[in-house]
Length: 337
Image 1 (cartoon, rainbow, N blue to C red):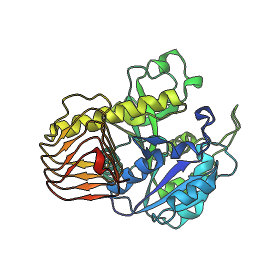
Image 2: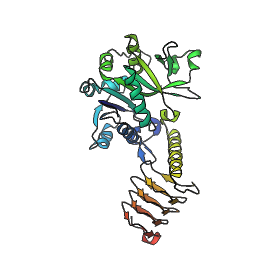
Image 3: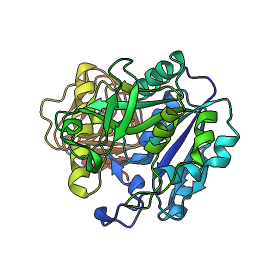
Image 4: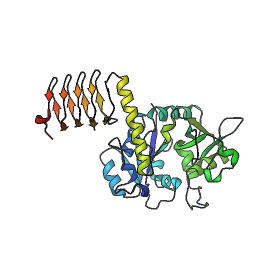
């Protein structure tokens, strides 16, 4: 696992197009806030210390991370990704000599597996910076990774609006997730300027400055292009939910869970279901629900934070926070909220 590694999660976006009464990073995918998806991925990858940079409705983000062993920094003025990292300078200074992972708090599918693989690629090749990239069939709108043709290292990250016709043909894009040597990042962070049309400080300029100082910058290509996906509105959020739902159900079926018809079946990412259990239409499993082997769930059953032993039958019921003994048959008349 990564040694002396920390993470900064950028979570200051306001998500105006969501038209929501909460910060975008607290919007849920499969009943789980996107920020929690990202925090969990970092933890599973072995990252020790985490700092969340909050901005819009920061009190809600601070309340959400309270008690989770996570620090919080504030970006009260939203002036770009580079500016957000600047707001975590105290955190970085306390982690000199380490490597820092910078993540987007609204990209829930970034995999702990590729975070860890990118870390070792970053360390083993002695790089100051490594960006996790992805290859997309349609890269429109994303910053392109321009590689040095001789070394294969990153020569530049070019935003869509600044790209010429040749650069726009590049399919490798910036995911917005990076590994940096903390000392190298701190050395150039103060030199990032807002001399651009938006008047913002871009973290991609840190890559440019490191390259100018003859530091090594590379890119590690993620195996699944869905890892770069985020959501700026409820249409895109629906897409994330559909992808996550399909992935969870697919994995359950590979593990021997029977789902004869997927209609209305939704299973959260932290739910566990034993082999030979059958999930019938209209069944929703949420939170930290744990279901044993050989059970029948549904139709039209909703379980939230329920632990059910082997051989249970939960038919058209809604249970929350219950312990269900093995072999129990729970029918509608016995439902307890």
